Length: 336
Image (cartoon, rainbow, N blue to C red; front, side):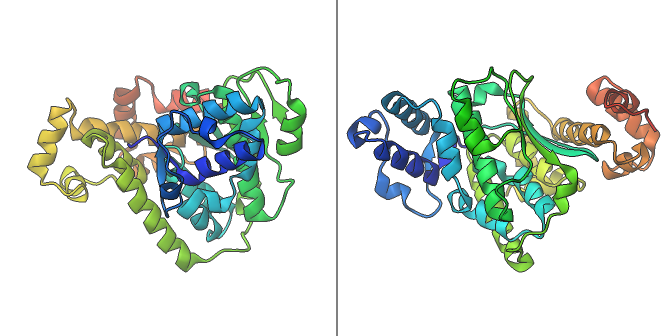
């Protein structure tokens, strides 16, 4: 997947720096950025250029809370078509579904894990190497999440919990001003969560007809981002988006505009086979279902295309080295 950042993020960061009195020539040093080009609809900037811009801004402003200040300005319009799609959703649950499918439009290299339970909806990030610098990236995401939810729901006090994998910072007062009081530091990983009951909160801007149009555009943009990826990565991205459907190899080849023979050869060139990729994605989905504990194992087996739960149990053990019951037990509930 192409490593790039939405241009509005860079433009907003430039505005912040200029407001702080940073000379534009110094700010853009070593960045291949043309502001006119960045104004175009759907424009993106290379991650290397955005990282250099961040480093320049941090150095020239000396502002340790820069990530928080940038995130506070990342409103729905800054997220471009995905932000517009959010606004058309029926409720917050649909927003989270869209975000889970298309967050790579906002940060292609970011890895997020979504955990649904009866009590909370949690989004966590296990990969701290995706953030350079770490605190800036996590502050920006946290503040953007707060600002986006406020814009969608008209509620500045939405009960978000924030967890950070580093010590309490010296600028804690800015964290509290922008994020609220539910802040936790020295955590195992970065995470953002809220009560699951709030997923049913309706959105005043809901428009189902427009949602279909915006989501189709999100899917097209994501496919464009994936064009530079290998065939295996494109396959994984496609299978993850088709959760519960799991098409056959010829269908996937057709979706990627290839003949089955060419598709099979391209995968072999990367040292992989279709079944291996399909099993990897089914293992990911099965593990999430098991840890969510909302479905009995027989239903999970059916969701993954198994008519016989015993076949699913054997397959899951082959994929992961664990039994479904053990994974569900790890999550605090006996297997069923």
